[in-house]
Structures are given as structure tokens and as C-alpha cells.
Image (cartoon, rainbow, N blue to C red):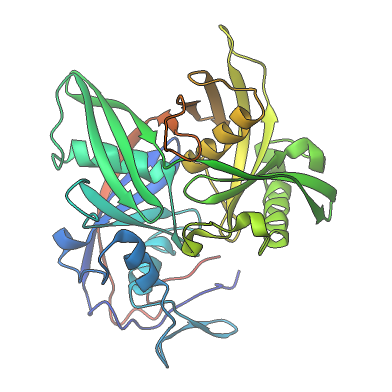
Length: 369
């Protein structure tokens, strides 16, 4: 196949710059962590994490562009060189995800993060938050008991979130992610697709998600149907672009459909409780291997709005890969708009890397297929 994106040079990374990463997976979804300060890389301008993300999305300078097989594409900013280096082949892959660790907005948080994937910079990432909580404790950045819990407060572009890291016998056994409040913004939005007209529900949970049953498209959530599920998700995301319910009323930078959740009901588990399987299609056809952390938060808000999930009741959320998150809606609190949700899963370190960019490497920061 012909690479869809290649870069033969980079303006941001000096020749043979070494970039160190620590990699985790959360329920099967990768998360590559780069601590900018520890790596000796320049800080991202901005006073808050949201401002730093806006910096990353600034229009390109004249001549700052990426060579592709069909011409040139504008690059959103110099840090995109670093993102491409880490996400694209041969150092990454089309399903890679990660984050740049940056300073928090203030002393109330332990760290900030700028999330990235193969198509750009996202506003929220639940599975990444779980991984960052585990990393912060495992690396000693945040003190934690051998037995018990430790809270890691993280500033993300959509607000401040908390990862509660669970410990036993000196090891991290799981992480619970408390998200920014989730809000249902629209119900039964009609969307015309190649598989017929369907109805999607929209909810904001740090990012905007559209959710609908896969059966409405004549599909099932399984690996055999992944190609069809991906095409449907992309089509729905494109069709909903610009819909009023996708706009964030408080911060326009968080607007737009980030992911499409195609789900199906599974038999209730022993002892009761809802059980669903989903696949989340996000960005430009990227598939979440996990049950999707922020997407699970959106599903919790939608299920609570339907009266199917009371505060404290548990949703068991299974991914297309068979991995599991559990989630619940917390009781409402005065002055908090939306529903506060918690999602629990496991995150494990998979390795550490020392990447370099050889100036004689004609592939530059890489390519995607």
C-alpha cells in the first residue's frame, strides 16, 4: 500500500533528538507518555492546558507543511512533528494514542496532559487518564500507600479530572477515573447513512459522543464486522458535523463529534446490573480497543437520563476486544450541572522507548497506511 502521510524533514526536532516514552495499555488501548520537561523538550506556550491545546492547533506558518503522496498538507504546529514521530509507522501505528505531560493549570493538580492520536489533539481521554494515574504512582511522581488508594489530579483540555489509583501489596491493581460532568444534549437525532436512516443520542463527557445501537444499522459488535462498523461510525460522525447539539456551550474549543459509540445489549450479569458491548469509532476511523473511558462516561449519562441506571448502580462495559470497564453515576450535587461519573479499569506498563529521528532517514517522522 502507498503511505498516506510521510514527512521528509522536521523543523521542531533537531537531528538525532532522543525522545523517551513510557508506554501503558488500558484495557487493550495503548497510551504513550512523554514528559516534556523530563525529556528536555521545549514547553508548549499557554497558561492553561486548554490554552496549550489551542496553541497546538494554531494555523501553520507559510511553508510549514507535510509532504504526502498527493501533495502537501498543512501542519497544525511544530509539536505536530513530535506527535507524528510517535504515532506513525515505523515507531507507532494507526491505533496509537498518547499524551504530552505538561504543567497543570495551578497547584490544585499534580500534572497536565495534552492528548494526541494519529489525526491530531483531543479534548479528553478516559483511558489515557487511567494510564496517567497508574504512571504517576508507579513512577513515584505521586506518593501512594502500599495498600489503599492515592488520588492523582490531572488537568486536561476539558477540565480537571481525578484518577484514584488502587493499591495492594505495593502494586497498582486498578484505577478509577472521575470525569468532568457529563451532559445529554440531544436525543433521537436522525442521521441518513448508507445503511438507512438511524437515530443517534448525543452527550458531552469531556468530548462529544454520538451513541446508537449497532442493530439499527443491521450490524453486530464483533471483530468480524469491524470494517463495516468503522465505515458506519465515520459516516455518522461526518453527517453530524456542525449539528447544534455537538457544540459545547461553555467552550467552543470542545465542540464537534469526537466519537461514535455503536453498542449492543448483553445479558445482565449475576447479581444484576446493565451489561453492554460497544465499539467507539473516533477521529478519522480510529478504533478504541478499550470500552472507551470518556465514551463510557457519556453512556452512563445517557442511561441515567433514560432512567435505566440509578446513582450507584453499575454498568459493565465490554469492548470489541473483550476487555471491561465498570462505571457508575454518582448522586447529584448542588451547583453541578450534568452527571458526575466514575469509570474503573486496569492499566499496565508495556515498556519504555528511546526514539530518535535520523536526519538521513527519508521517511522522516513516518507514515500511516
